[in-house]
Length: 285
Ligand SMILES: [Zn+2]
Image (cartoon, rainbow, N blue to C red; front, side, top):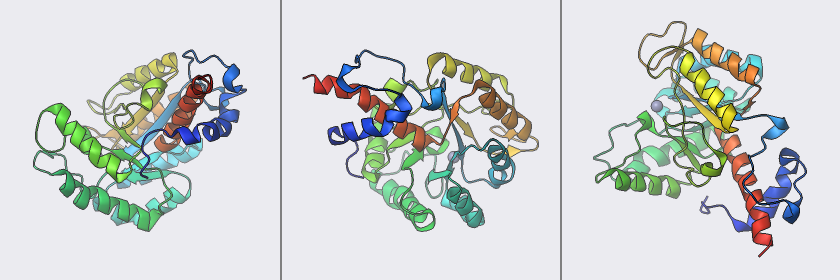
C-alpha cells in the first residue's frame, strides 16, 4: 500500500460508502464545522479490544467471552508464539477477528537496530507469515512491542521518526501504543501511527481504571483501545488480567452500549468519516 496519506481521489467514494453510518450526510449542504463523529447505529463511542503476543490464554479464556457477546477483536501476533496454535488463530481470523503484525520475535530494546535490519528481520517476515497463513486481505495495523516507540539512535523524536518511516514503507496504516487517553476522532488520522491505548492490567489486576477510561471515552464520543496480554483464571504477574476482571470490563462495554469492533475496522471508519467532513470544504472552493 504505497498511498499512505488520505487520498483526495477516494473522498467521494468514501462518503458514499459511509452514508448509512453517518446518516443523512447531504454533501456540500452540511456545515463543515467540527461536529462530533457519528458512530454506527447511533452508538455513543467506540471501543476496540486488542490482545497482544499471540498467547494461548487469549484463545482459551478471552475468546469464549468475546463470542458470548458476538464481538470481534484484534490479535497482534508474533510468529514466535502464534505458530504453536496456528490452526486456532486461523479459525479465529476466519470468524472475522483481525490478526495483525506484532513482529516475529518481539524485540523491545531497539537502540542498536538499523531501520533496514528491523524491516528485514522483524516486520517484513511477519507480514510474509501473516500473508501465507491468513491471506493478504487483512487490516495492516501494528502494535509496538513493549510499547516502545524508538528505533535506533538519536533523541526521542528522531528515533520515533525512524520507526514511523519503517512502518510507512511497510504499508502499515495504523499503529497502536500502550499509553494515552481515549482517541479523539479528529486526531486519529493525523497521528495514525501513534494511536493511544489503555492497558487495564498494567499496574494491577483491578477494574476501576478501565471503567474510568471507558466513561471518559463515552463523555468525549471517542474511541477506546484496550490492551490485554495474558487472560488467566488468576493474575500471576504484572500485566496479567484475571478472567474476572477481563469479563467485568467486557460487561461494562455492553452496558455502555459502545460500538465494539476491531482496530483496523474502526480506523477505516474514522478515516472515511473525517474525509467526508473535509469533502464539502473542498467542493466549496
Ligand atoms: Zn507485545
